[in-house]
Amino acid sequence: MKRDGRSTVTTDSSGLGGAGITETAVRKATGKGWGDWYSLLDAAGAREMTHQQIMAVVALQHPADWWQQVITVTYEKARSIRTKHHKDDGFSANASKVINARVTRLFDAWVEDAQRALWLEAPGWHVRKSTPYKNLRVTWIEGRTHVEAHFWPRGEGRTLIQVEHSKLGSLADVQRLKAFWGGALERLRELVETADLPSPLVA
Image: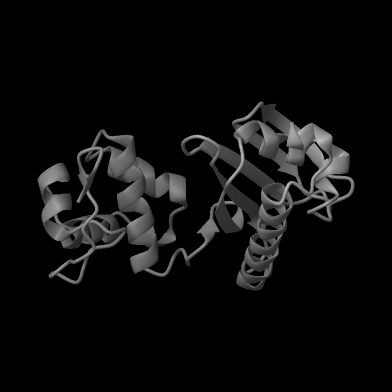
């Protein structure tokens, strides 16, 4: 299977691959196999580098941003520099759900305080940036972590909502907030799909 011309096959007979990219695919796209990339980065001292520094080393060998990111993240995981859910600014938790409602209804359920209180306990959050019916960037209620919500129409009357809660301090936070957002999105789904929300969302 391919995505935008990039292989997403997960089998890697070499045992060196990652990110769902095979040895064959990475060698065809970059001229190097996974083992070659790992050896090159080890020799450059990448085990002691930051994410951006590693990407800069990869960029000297390959111009495509997408491959630079994939190779860097895969190397970090292979060398235990980065654990699952971890980013440069901490850990992140993700949740998503397809809901049988128009994107306008769901977006209003996030941005209207009275609507949001029906399914999400989050008083005092701060919206940093809002693109109507597309995405929200929010400083979470404790003022330290961030939430991004993306809204993707999926045909007539259906919407995919994707949530990322970032700048978390630990894997325990990841598990806790993954469950939190999973429950919150399910409550939103129940409210919207049963037309239990006030008139602004039912219209």
